[in-house]
Length: 392
Image 1 (cartoon, rainbow, N blue to C red):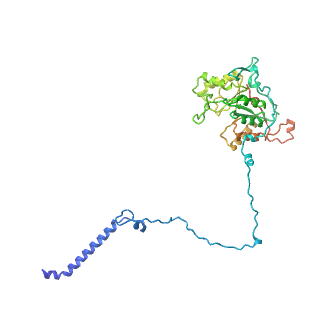
Image 2 (tube, rainbow, N blue to C red):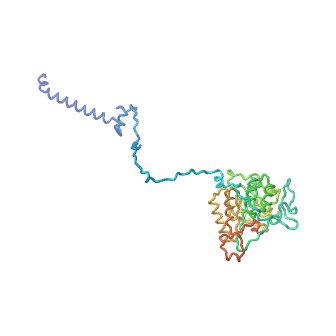
Image 3 (cartoon, helix red, strand yellow):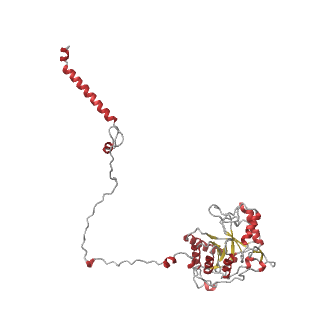
């Protein structure tokens, strides 16, 4: 046996070495396969061989960070004679007065002399019936005189000029604003007051003293009642006919003369038709003028024989900016050229008042037909009171 072992000693040793080598290679490959795949050497460095929590935390610069390059200062000798001279800039100083000139403040409007006078500043006793306190309800007189025509006035317009009637509605909340608008705008501009005016006599009387026809706003239920509440005098869809008529009478019952109502934008469709028919009939029976300033045709479709009425051609509301207002006024000019007249209803927002004021100043002075033949007339428009555009 010993002889056999000695004979194959070297062979056995070689086999054992080969087996050990094969096992070593297999173990090494097994270790390599069990290691996680790393994206970089940095990732491999951060984890141990068991792939557990990181052993190191490295803070590396952002790969997109810009390198800061230190610039060397370069000194250049400048010949004094060739150096361009620059006039030192003076600081521009703006005064509060200069700033306010560009802000549309009603107090900046100039006072204008009244361009017409009304026959009645206060009530015609034949056109009223008792109301509450010093407030009176308008009515048709026994001789068929009507408030809308009696409290208005007529102005002469040359035959080659187009009639422009403007109503500033929603007046009255601020008596100072009423005074400024009434003093600055031509007397031919009509004013309409909210039924919630806190000092209605002062507001209406001031306007009429300066020659402005006066009216009162009739408020409808807002389309967006969650955003805008038109108050306890508005005509809402859930009212009974009796309550709607009561609110109408409370609206027109004023301590100074009003010639009619300006129906402000709101719900005026088939759902409110029954109420609207009754209110328009009441306006007719009391001799009042009605202006439809809504954006719908519900009121326009209601036929009431003998009612003095007019649909507004242009409505300029409080949400418009100067550019939009000017576009509406350009549209108004086109309508006036086409139809010979135009009716504009506008809110009393300062930017609207200022834009209207400047627009009116661009109107050409009225001249006779013969004089117009020798003159260049770019804007043959004439301001007229609201009552001048109304036909029964």
